[in-house]
Length: 188
Image 1: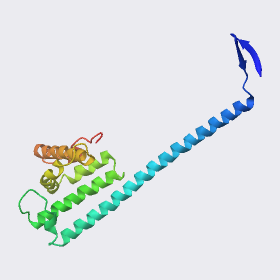
Image 2: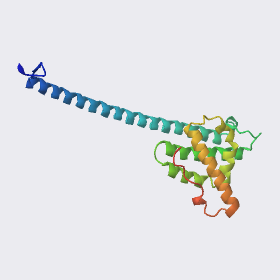
Image 3: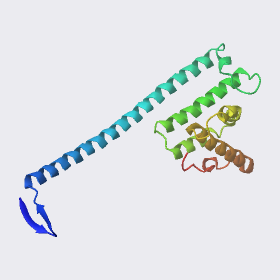
Image 4: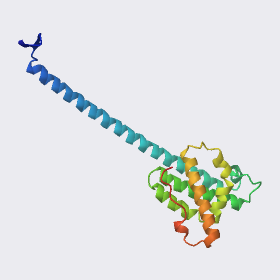
């Protein structure tokens, strides 16, 4: 159908049914796009939940292995990965227990139970102990091999700074106000 002439060209009108079909198609495409985005979000949430479950299972296995080694004196030497020559068994057990406390705190952070600020506060409390700081120093070479950009390496640097602050606070104030020592990291 010809409707008129403008600037030497003839324009045809588009039937209403074509316009309605185009609008309807656009609506269907928009709805499909929204469904696609929603499915992607659900997949991401499911993947994150699956990772948390795997971390929890892995953590449980770790605890069982450490418990077996500390209970059986014949297995304890297998976990002797410290640079010092022969450590007495009681010190090895203390280091393993210190590792368990540290791993427990990290696990809480990794699965979302603790925020970074809460993790920092928990670490400040457990590293107040001289035995924890001795363990941390004895395992320094373990952390040296971590990729610098890894989450574990970044959190290790947070603990390094915290331990240095606790040591300085202990030397200056004889342990007063330990609960305010160190500055919580903003991002790791």
